[in-house]
Length: 341
Image (tube, rainbow, N blue to C red; front, side):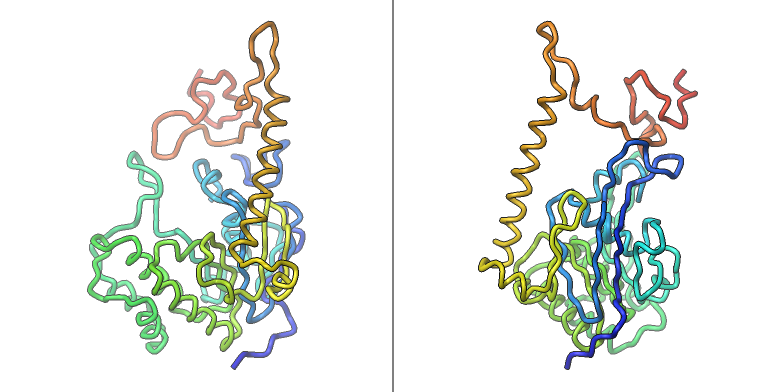
C-alpha cells in the first residue's frame, strides 16, 4: 500500500551554482560553473532517475582536490552536493527542510544516505582508486553495525544473496559491492542517493535490489535519486526522469509525461537526447579549435591545451613526487612555487 505524500518536499534544489574551489577555497577566477541554475523538487515516495552523458555533472550534484575533478561527472557532483559532500549556500540544497552540508545529523542518523564508488582509496606511490581489500568476513562487517533491525538485515542479506563467509580480500568486485550496498541500507533511510551503484551486480541481484528499493518508496515513503547508464529493467521503475547536460537541468518531469511526449522506450529516449548533445558538443569543439589554432607564417600558434584555463591546485600530484604543472614556466598558481626557483 502506497503511503500518502507529505506536504513538504523531501528534496529541494534552488538555483544551484557550483564550481570546484582552488587552493584558497574560492572558485578560480574566470572559471565556468560546473553546475549552473539547477533547480529540482522531489516529494516523499518519488523515485527519480538522473541521466546524462559521461562528465555530465550528475555526480557533482549527489572531493574537490586535484585528481578527482576530472573523475567526477556532473551527475556525481550533483549527488555529492545533495549528500553533503560539497559545501554550497544553505538555501541552495535542502533535504527534509535542512541544509545537506551544514546539518551533519542528516547523514549521521542515516536519514540521508549516499551510496557510490566510495569503497576505494588513493594509496601513496601505488595508485588511485585502489579497492579497499582486507582479510575480514562479510559477517563481521554486516553484524558489526549496531542498533540494526534484525529483520531488515536478514531481508537485505536475502535480497543481495550475501554469503557471510565471504572474505573481502578474496571476493569479486560484484560480491564486494553487495556487501557495500547491504551495509549502506541497514539503517532505514528517508532520502537515498545512488551513484552507479549497480554497475558490478549481476542481473538477478540488480533486479531484486530495484524491487526492494521500490518497496521502500511505496511502503515507507522514502525518496530515491538514482544516477545510472544501465537502463535494463528500469522501464517502469522511476516515477520521475531528470536529464542533465553541460551542468544544467535540461528536463525534469514525471515518467507519465515523458511517455506521452515520446513513444520510444526509456533507453531509446535517453539515447536520442545524448546523441543530440554529443553532436552539439562536437560542433562546439570544432569551433573552439578553429578559433585557437591560427596559422602565422606557416606555423601553428595557439595550442588549444595551452589556451585552456589552468585550474588552481597545490602543485603536486597526489601520491607522486612530481609537479602537476612540471615543464611550464609560470608557477605562480602553485602554493609551493618557491621550491622550484
